Amino acid sequence: MRFVISPAEVMETLAMVQSQKLDIRTITMGISLRGCSGASARTTGRKIYDRITRTASGLVEAGKAIELEYGIPIINTRISVTPVALVAEGLNAAGMACVAREMERAAAEVGVNFIGGFSALVHKGCTAGDRSLIDALPEALSVTERVCASVNVASTRAGINMDAVALMGGVIKDIAGRTAAAGGIGCAKLVVFCNAPEDNPFMAGAFHGVGEPDATINIGISGPGVVLRAVQEQPQADLGTLANTIKNTAFKITRMGELVGRVASRRLGVPFGIVDLSLAPTPTRGDSVAEILEAMGLERCGTHGTTAALALLNDAVKKGGAMASSYVGGLSGAFIPVSEDLGMIDAVVAGSLSLEKLEAMTCVCSVGLDMVAVPGDTPAETIAAIIADEAAIGMVNNKTTAVRIIPVPGMREGDRVQFGGLLGEAPVMRTSSFASHGFVRRGGRIPAPLQALTN
Image (cartoon, rainbow, N blue to C red; front, side):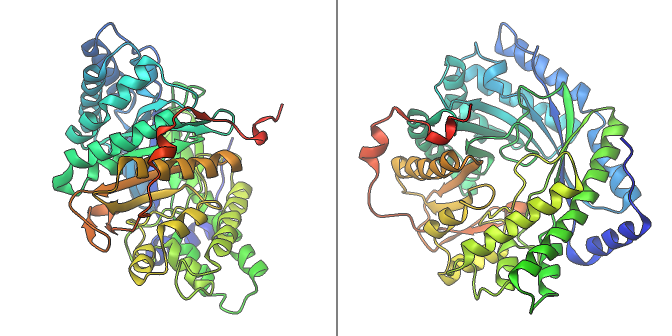
């Protein structure tokens, strides 16, 4: 299919890049590891390394060339792979950790920022390989820099695997302890999902699903700054008009993303997959989802009306993007990661945004409780209960939700932890002082809701 973009669109896009912080957040190459299983960790790891380095050898160079030719900033180039628990099923935890090291080595060799897919899908139960991978997570994420992991613990069709949820609470605490010197940063590379998508280009939750081809190119766009400017230019517009303005803006952003994706696909000889419409903020003033909500008329993000404003934003972004591309996928919505959004940080510090309000907001947007820092002494059962709450929202509403939570060792409510780069900094947020231990320890599986019966 030929993709045509007009000179006027090019000039408008360049203006967005120069003054409104528009960028391509990531070009992510998905790579299938099917066929990489071996009789030992060493053999499996070598096959995985060879497959990744062979397939992605030109990825970074292609991204740089496109950035130079089109003048569009490309912030990250990344790789996602088939969930490793499927590929390395016969390995124990030590063997899984060895595979993670080979993934790290391959990512370093080809020069990408992150590699995702050290993952397991356990929404209905764990195999021996799933359990080995989960047991390996603390070691794998503490000795690597680029490797990202995810565990899908729930789905609308299966319900919530509470045994896996309880297990992940303890794993997250272990990872935080092993990376305590860096504020528990290992937890920033782990996402716990409900209804995980198979074509998500964003880290830390990206993996290459079993229904995907041998390789594919997925694009993650950004654009909170562009949408913010569009909203600011409509100070008196009613909400219906404002939604239409956001929709038109999202259309333009998505067109730019698809252009980059198709050019990268052609140059690399890899099929074009999807454009993820998600508004991905950064810890920079003017590039914040919270600031968009406040520009709609809220004194501070988190006050009454915030969930409604976010619902309007998320819906308008999806509608505009869907009109711009026939290949929309991934998460596609508005991210609200606390540490990566300066407006969210300000709202937490001001006292208008709590963990409970964040949870309510995730009912209407992508993805969930993202990059949330909590006190280091938060019990594993409380973390598991937070994951269960978020999974319940995703399960009942048939949407993707997730938790990326960091119990920061040695820190208390009100402290601030510095992660640096796009991960930013996070104020440590209060969790409930009341326990959830008895509920979490019951285990078993929360049954799928009636919405699952769609056949």
